[in-house]
Length: 294
Image 1: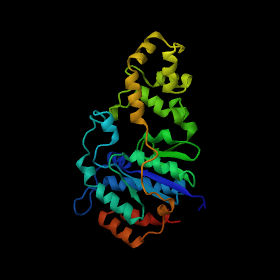
Image 2 (image 1 turned 135 degrees about the vertical axis):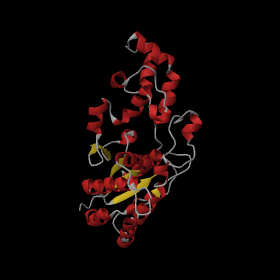
Image 3 (image 1 turned 45 degrees about the vertical axis):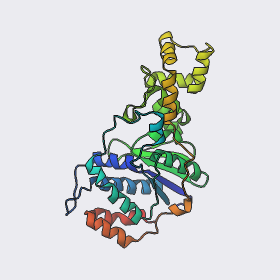
Image 4 (image 1 turned 90 degrees about the vertical axis):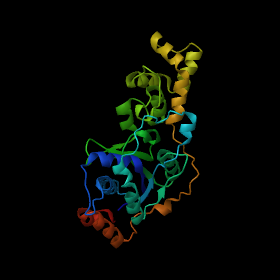
């Protein structure tokens, strides 16, 4: 086991959603649905082994609106309510994480992504950071010290995004992902973006101009070399572009009591974890515990 500090930051809600939809319904002997928790743990076990992680922390959303809802009342308005199957498994998931000694952070007014960003910003001074997530919202945080570990096509497949992989897939650097998404929008979160600007055009614009600010500065001084239709579209939707930019940015300075040493992983009560797994019917995971204890 490497002595290097290697921290996994779990994006809790996104990972639980991904696991829930990736596996067929599973229940324990009491009829409690367990597929999301089981899938979550399969992914977590794999990531611990793959990344040789020795520090782990988890972040979750709360039910309360966030500052983004205050900025844009229609933020996530089309998002369907959390399925009952996930609602019933959320407290079980948190109970399992607590049994593993993994700290859990959640804060009203902020999304889990903001807590992930805040912890990554602080922890990268001391550790190699890996964000474990079911989506790509945190690509904006990727740098030399922070990478994103997410799922591939199946629950057993994984992809690690470093700076090069982000550029290869999206055509822009991680630091430019916010500008990119401000132009393309994000339908899942109802982030408007600029209508008619797709991913290819957005990447070309950011590659050429560097950022949203530079792009609109050049438009205002009439120095931007753009197709007339694209230029007109950007001019007419400037407010949407900058609103979208604010919505997709994650906060890196949320007031939370994070200490890296509190996240040291491995010193947990194995008998307690085994008892919980047995109650959930996760006998195969009981046998796999030695894989994650270094």
